[in-house]
Length: 292
Length: 286
Image (cartoon, rainbow over all chains, first blue to last red):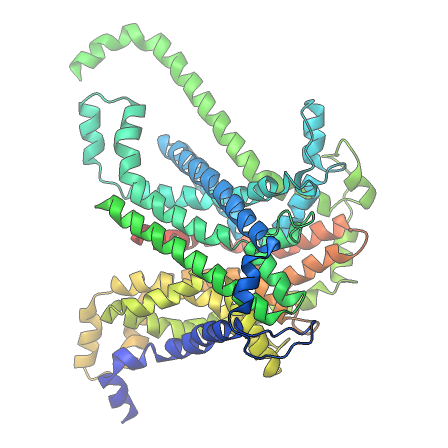
């Protein structure tokens, strides 16, 4: 009897548990956040969960720490993403250019940074970045190069964090591009060879244009992850020194779980969510235009 | 071909030196990339076996008398065994429940082209986790579920479920529909056909999905630091707590980092082929 019912309505019953999970764990919390964003709820200020209208949003627009966080978020994202894309594609082309023994081992090594626990990785970089006892400044000193403060300096903290992100995630771009390269048809390359094109000509005129869709998806994936980077930033600086590495994610986290301003944090979440979704859609749309 | 071979004797020598030089340069750049990727791991392992004095010593010693005291600290005074068990329970729980609800959903998406459902599930991957974390914290607090395995498993499923669906949809799409239809004609129910025909053919896909779901739960920091406390603390939170003391115990920190990352890395290397496919599948499919 029940089995009959499932047979007839398979297309609704099979995904049902997942749909219930989505409604309870994603859609309801998002709606609840939207509702809370219009409330003055704060545990530290002792304000109850009452409707106060768009006050939080007006306050946010005048909140210097918010605009600082917006700037930090985009600075970090742009820096990390751009270098990851350039290096990732370059390394993929490098690995693809020649055949040699031990290629599998190289692929294994590529996997390590992104599978390693980010917080653990953050701790290792913390030790290496240490301005006086750290190995990086020791090497720079030996080479008589300037020794930056890395994450301890307000000007160098974001590039330093971006370096960790680049170390961690460039291999993903490489793996995606390598997979994309094996999927390319061979005819255009043969045609280029017959026409006597050099390696660089083939690269610029044939390989890269054909890889563009793959590269742009990889870029979109990295954008989505960079903009919400939490583990390495919170683990290494907590947003400091001062607020100089406080991104939107960290600022919202602090508002919610350090100051317990649930209303204000919810309004920040709505804005954060809108930015991420907006830019993602924009990138996806541009990509579709590029492909046509 | 013939034309080439007539010119080749004259050009052999400069050609060969150029090729050797090219190969050398190639090897050099490759080694540089590998060096950059491996140094942090090398540093982690080296310092895990050093005493506090050896760690701050400059120039750093590459050859030294190793000590096991850091590891004894991690498992003795820091009680890491307990945190590892918590992480395993939560990772396994979120993966098992994720498979239970994710597999039929992915099958349905593949079979009936329910693209809208697929997009909503992938949203969980796209939307910043903190968007869910703040309201979930408030809800779980009211339900008195903070610091329980239930709340952590549910929250970690937000990370694991998208991976499971993401990996399984293209997999199910590649299984010929005739197979299940034949089973149904033979009198099997749709559930029966799914469990005994489709799933046995999906072994590699399920392995990939499970590994990714488990590893990303094991690595998860943000959900755990908010939702877990003394009873359910996971390893990433435990290692973070190391640096909240006034004096950082670098040796202990590095030993803890080795203990956390080693199992994940071993797992990743053993199942490399599947993991790469899982990580890149969404991107290649577009």
